[in-house]
Structure formats: structure tokens, C-alpha cells
Length: 119
Image 1 (cartoon, rainbow, N blue to C red):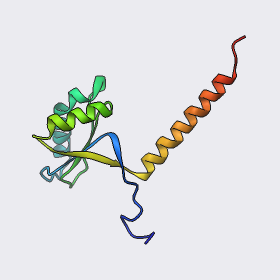
Image 2 (image 1 turned 90 degrees about the vertical axis):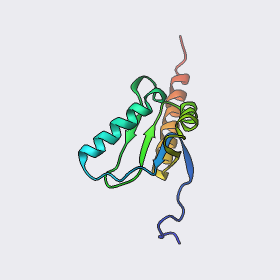
Image 3 (image 1 turned 30 degrees about the horizontal axis):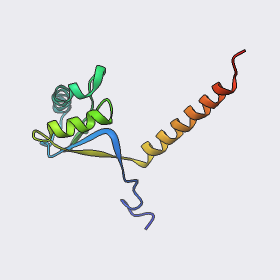
């Protein structure tokens, strides 16, 4: 079953990314820009200084919103669930591996800095 789509999918929830479903289908670039602007305005206060990062694929009925941190994702889920159909987005295996690699490099760099004693 290794070659079957959906089998062995990494099933971890993304800490800061929300999945919005049940939106009307959009097909043109101006519609994508309008949807992105609408969601950026709606989720602005959860995104911190830079606002929320919104990804809107063409020809779909869903979007992704990435907020500042996990706490703000929880707040957005509670406050915006009456307006949008929201869930936590799932992390892809690529995202999980990339995060693990970044954490390992950061730890490796920190060990290097710790070994340089102060004279």
C-alpha cells in the first residue's frame, strides 16, 4: 500500500495554520485576490505585526490562513468559527521534515556557540 495516495500520510496538526473550507468556488485571478483580501482583513488581528498570511488556490472551495502563533490560532478558531468553517491544517511530511532539520541546525549552531568560551 506504499504507493497508494493517502497511505502513510503524515498526520500532525500544524500549530499556526488554519484550514477554511466551504467557501464558494473561485476561478479567476481577481476572485482569488478578493478572497485573499477578505480573509486577510478578517484574520488580521490574529497574525501579529505583519497580519495573517493567506493562501488561496484557484478553482477550489478552501483556503489556508497562517497566524502568529499557536495561541492566536486557538483564539481565531474560537472567535471565527461562527463565520467560517475552520479546522487546524495538517502539516505535510515535507513541512515536518523541514522543521526538524531547522531545529537540528539551530541546536548544532548553539552547541558551536557554547563551545567558544569567553576569555
